[in-house]
Length: 408
Image: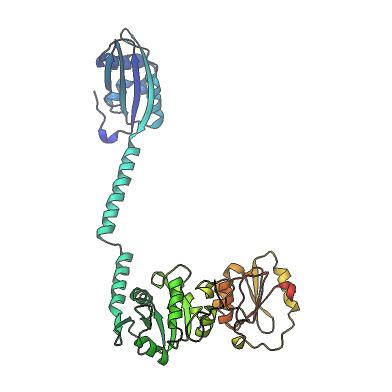
């Protein structure tokens, strides 16, 4: 009698069996072969299938109690799904085992390959995790190498031994950050003219640098960043201030976020105005409940706060034509970009407007089916845009004029 190779087993038929009397294993196996003989034709005859190795050794587990017998039948198969299902169904036709009435019910047909695949998957995960832990891939290896090189580029600058990039002396413009980790992150993206304050108070080295170079203070986007701006007010001669996005620290920013934050830097005097800082470096007592990060609020730098530094406008152009443009855009979520003759330079979706303006110079006005946000207001001021025509004004620019179509 042929034997099925354990390697070739595809399915295992599981069946429960109940007998009204007591029987032994040979009785049950004999009933299986005898009562299915001739039932399915020569091609699916169990004896022939077992001889050819397509059906394996039938295993029977029995338990007798109270004059009755229960058990489980296990029948391995290397045939396809259809043939295996037919063989399984044929077992349920067995009604007697010796003198006992029998009832056989198929509980499941187990796909052995699924269990093997699941094992392979779980084991592969374990091995992959082990490989990642012990040996980083090429990208991770490159990142580790780059981080090591950037770490090696850090120098200690001045008598205060402040962590800094290697270009502090040569650069005309420098960037001041809060801590050593910020310097490491900036160096990671090739920004080498950076120095750390190493604390919330400016040291003599920082104060001297602000007098000799064009300096940008780059702080975290939290309350601590605003406190540092206040600490430096009146003690240093900074030129610009830049903040990380709300809730983020400079040390965790990606290159795109760093460059965008530096591009949207604001003048030092405006930063102090936004934070209501007086000439002696203290917060104005007139503002009782304003949060510390005032210049990150929606309506930052209202025009009336510092009229002396607001842009002086020439005689206003005839803007009535912009109302027609605004009506044309209504419902499209689009924006027109105009030159100083109010000619359309291009049309972009509102969601791409900020990125487009960041790369353009010479824009005179923008007409949009959208809202003037804090970021857009700052960007308009930094790019010298004169007019923003929008459906909603959520943030007022300091220099540009934000108008609704109804006011044209």
